[in-house]
Length: 173
Image (cartoon, rainbow, N blue to C red; front, top):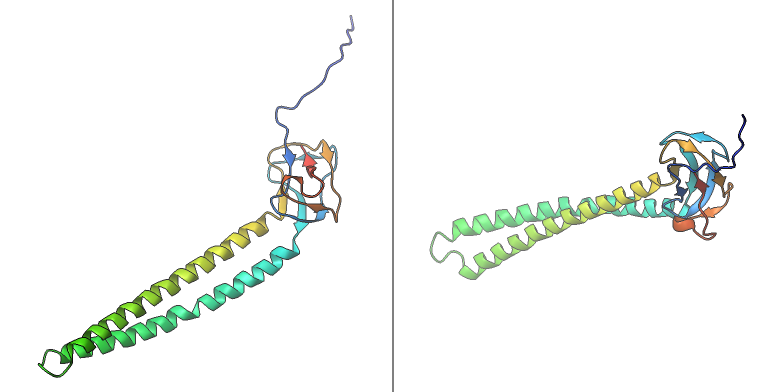
């Protein structure tokens, strides 16, 4: 006996895929019905603003690396001056007490500037890491093995987080 029953197959997992950054679709490597593996490249995006942002952050990082060295040199000079004044102050009447205090405060200020310059370098490094991570989002990959059931974008389309201008997902798997 042959029995015909209408039915509908539902997937265990279904996901709408959106890019994490706004940009233009450069290539899309899948279409409806394509089988994909987890981590497989689905599309690449171009983001000219991100390229400009990377150049700016790299310049900031390069510029931030010089002040700590100059600050250390100045702090070393202040340390030397303070040490000599302190040694000279051991002899009564050679150095005014106020001069020794001023030299100590100058040394502390120079050391604080070195610390601040080093923190600026670290902040610039973190900004560069952030942009590098954002550039990784220009490659849209499959979250799991599956089949593409919809493709809503073509090369040249503007896409973004949450669907971007069109409000539609790029791919549905």
